Image (cartoon, rainbow, N blue to C red; front, top):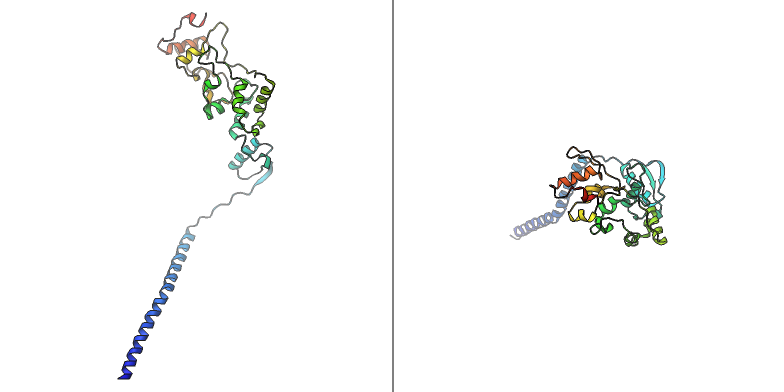
Length: 267
């Protein structure tokens, strides 16, 4: 009887230890299953890996920037052609002057572009187009006077005196500051000129809400200002801008609200 009881207790103990052993090995089994799943995923991912082409090694002569403006251009060129070898010295690695200022100053003095070369490479596109400066901020007499006038050196310096000194790299900025220091006006080359016997009043046209672009063209898109030719002929009158026929066409376009009598402009 005692032997049977011992046998029964021994069997129960074995079952307990077997169950406990299985319970202890469960985390190991889970870890093994997880590891197998990860390896399977890695295998699938490896099958889908696309070979990435390596960037071409830089070739050719080493191009070294000699100014901040040139550094801007070299970086832009390397973005288009990664094989270019460039070097930007530390003194030219700054962001001022900005690339847009460098480019606009260069284009404003482009001898091959239409229009005269001005004493300063002033870009209407950079100031009016990019920064949104209103025409009458610089040409302040336009709304009150027959003549639009040109901005004074003092007005220009009111903005440019606040700019970082690095902008002096641009020749036009240096010329502007020289005029300021020497108290000399800038001798701009006039582009839009009317005969002396024609009386044109800017203030009347501004009051009539005639946009500046109607006579001067899309100046906010011009780096170098020039006399834009007329491309639309009205009433069979072939006239260039600022000629009499062109003015009459414009007056007639307003349902004759603008007078076309001779003494309107000739007095």
